[in-house]
Image 1 (tube, rainbow, N blue to C red):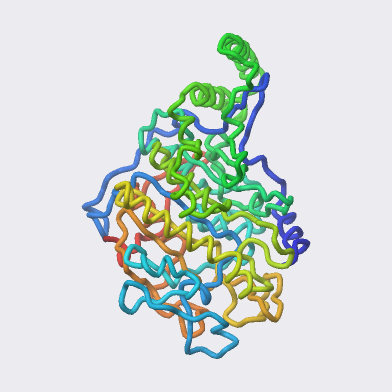
Image 2: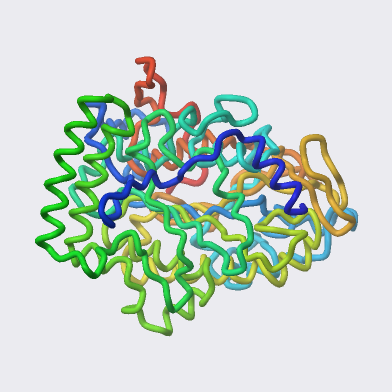
Length: 482
């Protein structure tokens, strides 16, 4: 898709939003990280009442969500169709994995050697072919509340916001409760991912929005600057400023009772605790990692962001989302949105770093004894059209060497805590166009994530109108649960 086409699509999503809800006072960064729990509800452990996998209930202590923004082609990654006509099967061929009968793309050679750790779901489907609204389904388990997008404050809350809202982990750490990576391209390539719905706290309020990291972790200059005190600000000046800010906060609350004002004190409190905690700050210092391990993840933005996610798991951050970055190499195929150059970009630009980082993460988590308690999710917001060069209503068209948007069937992969590795669940038809067996919705994936975390999908959250809303309308996918 041309940048202009995606730009028009992004503009239709309505008002742009400040993703981090950062406030500034005297040079100190105030992080939009946390709010004292608004509800008294907690996740209810009802493993015995769940229909599937009670032994997997609550095994996950953390989640790493690897989001391949743009829509990876299922036919070129996890669900190849070598017997289909050439216009359907494309150029890539399947290869054997270390699980008999499980075949994946030839351009995922490292993951093929680790397929025994993966559950490949080949029958995910929904109806939204718009990038910035389809993300909402995969990040929350719910369709976008308002057709076309609406305001971000109307969104359903992201998994991370829900976990923080119900205080599921009982955390009292200065580290953010959930973090997302959106590395900026050095050549200024547009970041349409910023316009994606579902990445924030939605109607739970801005204080529960994620901490977003824009820096490219692969660069020598990588530094999460918003965590740093200015060099000229010593403890005494910081304490003075903290006292002054408290006065301002009290006056602001008196003048205006709003979610943004209510969030301010909490933002500052978390920022102050984080900035003064060396152990918390160390989690963001990649320089201490073995250079050989960094090379295994890949010295590119995605690989180093995935490595950073592993460090955050070790440090106790419950949920980290790593969005694929727009590397800006081509202006006809950005992110995984391969309307043109589908096979060239998948083979040369997209699949090798994704294969490298995901496989390194699995090895690293296992070596550290963390894989059994860390759920890893690899997904995009949808897939690609069954035929090369096929354009669909609502998509942005496809060149003769590309595939358009397709939400009727695509693949999502799970690994780690509570997941049965070496599994294929569901099946697509002969063209990878529609589910042929065991269809799965994003709500089912959400229910599976919550199940692995030990959160009852029947839990109710209260929205801004005081209405109790069920956390998830899906069902945990028993076939992928250990």
